[in-house]
Image 1 (cartoon, rainbow, N blue to C red):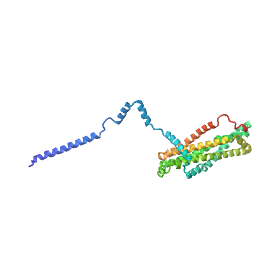
Image 2 (image 1 turned 30 degrees about the horizontal axis):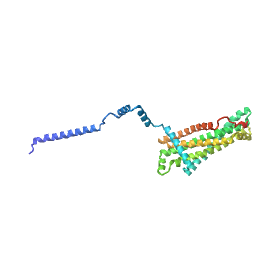
Image 3 (image 1 turned 90 degrees about the vertical axis):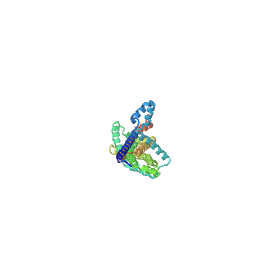
Amino acid sequence: MAVPGNEEPSESSASADRSTSALGASTSGRLSSSPVGPPPSLLAASMSELLGPSERVLRQIVAWRPPEYVWRAIAAFVLGGESLYRICRGRFHRRNTLQQLWLVGPGSLGVCLLTLSFVGMVFTIQFIREFARLGLTRSVGGVLGLALIRELSPVITSIIVAGRVGSAFAAELGTMQVSEQTDSLRVLGTDPVDYLVAPRVLACMLATPALNVLCFGTGMAASVFLAQVVYDVPARVVLDSALRAIDTWDVLTSLLKCWVFGTLIATVSCSWGFTTHGGAKGVGESTTAAVVISLVLIFVADFGLSLLFFQGQGDALRQCF
């Protein structure tokens, strides 16, 4: 028979046991969740002190990441090599190549012809003004022809192509990259280099030298017209002097320069477009960088090719005097 006076102590002791066990469980949970050992920063510092100088240098080398312009330059070099390899193997989209040829060639023809016309006339004014004082007006055509075909025509044509076509390439491919359209091409089994890059590189390689020839002819025609109409120098005299000064080597070097310039423009523009990130802001930055770098490379390559092709003393103007 239960004693009534013993019920309250038993209930109070049971509740005390439950509270004690709960307190112990919470305390053990906090102890198990709390980190054991020194903090990570102190541990990393102690590990770096334990490593020798060579190990620390090796870890820094492994953890180093190149700047953005370095890996973009590497990407441009690799992409250019892949494009040339696939062009040589015939692995490029034909229809896309024709579209890009129209953009680079006839699409840029009007701006190029207009620019070279005024450049030729400006140089005609300067040459005739100075040569007339020396009595060498008959030599104006030779000097003007050499200046146009060796330097002015290929460089100015390439600058126009870089500003008009290179910016379009970088903006278009950059937009496709940030909107993941290039990834969609890969999912569909289409190589973006074969479909997008190689046609653009081939179009610039073919169209830029052709533009150079047309621009040179237009520049000479504008110069002859100005000399005949304004300065009363016969057109026959200017053309005869130019033909005697220009030889086959000048024509070949001019075409080769434009071929190199066009390849550089397309490669840089496509690679900067393919490595675009950061949304619309990144597209604008890539477009600007592609045009600026293309212009710098044009002048650097022009210096190198001129130094290579025209070393020593020349005698092209000897027959003009």
